[in-house]
Length: 307
Ligand SMILES: Nc1ncnc2c1ncn2[C@@H]1O[C@H](COP(=O)(O)OP(=O)(O)O)[C@@H](O)[C@H]1O
Ligand SMILES: [Mg+2]
Image (tube, rainbow, N blue to C red; front, side, top):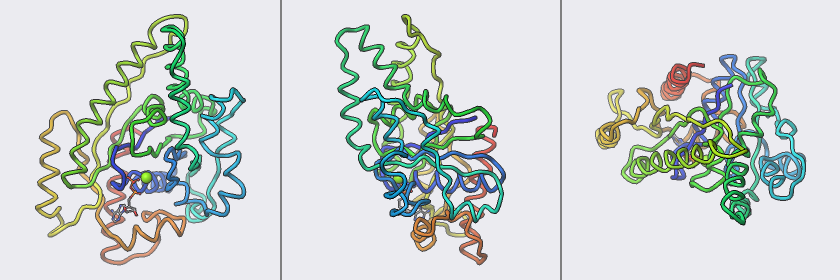
């Protein structure tokens, strides 16, 4: 089972869109996929589940908030009990693969504060212990999923680098960074990578010592994926190409060859319908070219993580 975090500090770059469409396309191809919505904005959740259904049957007992609440109040918790199978996309998948979801909760926004308090241990030894316990929360939860249940887990991260986001990185084999081709969106990527490296260093320092010694982590950045590309003559327009080239010169960063095209109409209506753009079964010029792009991205992703 491969675990991938979809992450970027910046909001509105396409983290949720990428998570939803990649997951759905992979399921369509027969893979068993689990999505985890780690963003209190709950956009991924509501791209698959209707708000009233979430309120009535999930809000209280079946969201990822339970994983962190139980750490704070010491109650028992089983990640398997949080998993749901969204109905509308299931119908669209027509028996192919598997697409499951652990939904998020608005209240997750307060969890970071509680976790920060928990991290402040009385002495050095205690605080190292707490560091590992808190940062491993998601990893430990995922470890309780029976092997073979899923081929891949995609985690949709919030647009920050708080503790909850760090638990995703600690749990991950791979990091995928969606971005928009503009100055402000590409600006923070270098900084994000440096912060991730720092987290991995700190974690591994703590992990190798003492009676709680645990395996080191090695999440690898599989690449930057450009979203909202506008094309002219089947290539990104010049203004956007500038940012793509700039980022590729940054060094050490892999950039996906394929990208996601911009199409406001298509992407705006998808969440309400509960089926990601890539699975919407209609044909037609612009529509087809967007879907072809998404499929190419999915193929590149499969290659990059060797799925
Ligand atoms: N390729 C695209 N073309 C047009 N609109 C898009 C595209 N990708 C995402 N969007 C829209 O942009 C907004 C932000 O995308 P989202 O995936 O929610 O970003 P993030 O999760 O990084 O905050 C959403 O309204 C989404 O529908
Ligand atoms: Mg999002």
